[in-house]
Length: 168
Image 1 (tube, helix red, strand yellow):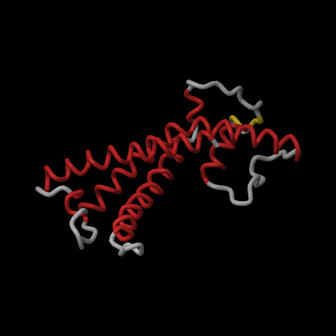
Image 2: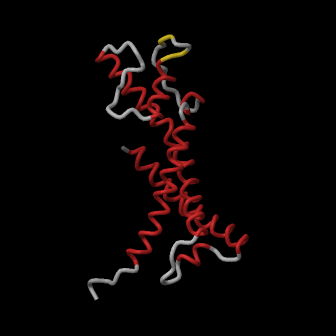
Image 3: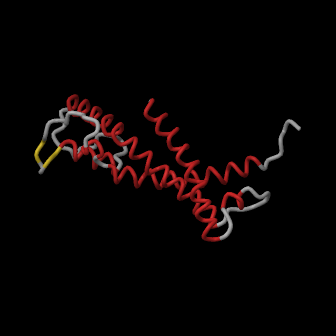
């Protein structure tokens, strides 16, 4: 649970910094910064604001995936070893989870088989390249999800802030 909190905190911090960097870069190219545009009362999302927030979200997702990958791989290795020991599964193609994601399937196959031969569960060692097995799939998923999330987040934040204050 601590790893999820760490990754989310880092993700929001990176997003915030990346948002300002991308806004400045887009402003240099187009002459108007997306953050200035979006902060005008009554403004609507423009291609510049969507690109700015989407790129910042993708950047945050890529870095967060890099940080989270060893934790996810360790968790999955432990879950797989427990499930395989308790159910005596002989094939890695047997579904382990009700919804088998591409990343889970890829990492499980990398962890359990090598050249179609069963292998022992790996000894978990941080700072090794094997701890980043499945990083590409994880990064692609995280970039896409964070792009959508942060773009929506900024739009909804603006709409909620525009609502009248019920206390007044």
